[in-house]
Length: 405
Image (tube, one colour):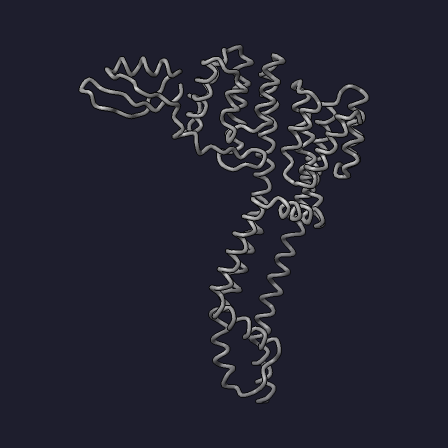
């Protein structure tokens, strides 16, 4: 059932407003009349579903785990032969979160009104991506909706586990950075100023390292707030430019591709996402050009997306898919050979799936390698900073001992 906002007149002539759950607007009016109310206006409530954003393929809010679970439940119940409206009711009852339940009930109400499942999903673009809706539509047209939903569930679960793996791997380095920064700020704010007051009475020239440290500490104490504000403003304007300035965002994405390890990881992640999405859509019966168009929209790096869109244009003009993708120079040779083999054998979706699996394994290796280098690099950098502070504090004491000795 969906939630409907209503405005009605009671037996005393007073206007009442509220929310009622029903399968359709017609049933909502009937329920209101049964309560002795005369309905004036009934609209689908957006109170619980207006804030939906699904963390799938890069958008924030309800998690990919929830979407994968919901998709898996839909596929399982459809495989069991249950009617679609009954399946949606069962999934809504199984869902614990109120927002997700309201969304599923709203989709169910649209299905009961005669809409297809895919078109019902498209009414909530913040919740269901173009890939999701197009794949569901292809599954409905081919009569294999349960199989398609199973593959969608596999895909979203894989994306969730990959994101979770990266987040867990970054916990230790992040904690290290914050602890080290805390130690540095404590030394510069509290220890160094006390040493300055001691050294000011010595009456002899201080080592260059100590002078530099005193200068940093003094500037941090007097300009620390302004530096913090400047950093916050820079981050704000950078994020704003990334959202609203396409040219700036393209240049940043191009710069990221030039960074060792990071650039390679971005290439592999985006081409793997394209290959897997292309495979899902192709196996669901979506035409090749439409599948390439949808898959390219899910590439987050703009230079790579532009190159793949140009490749799709060349395919539209009659070029082979493998040759067109090879000309982008972003896809690894292994993936190109697998796609070419798939075109030749008529098993394109299977080869795309293999290419995506191969690239996902490479992403895992890249993540492990990058983090393996990242952690000791942080230790060395922070250790060098602490060593600099300690030496800058102790060198004048050593000089004083030599002078008195």
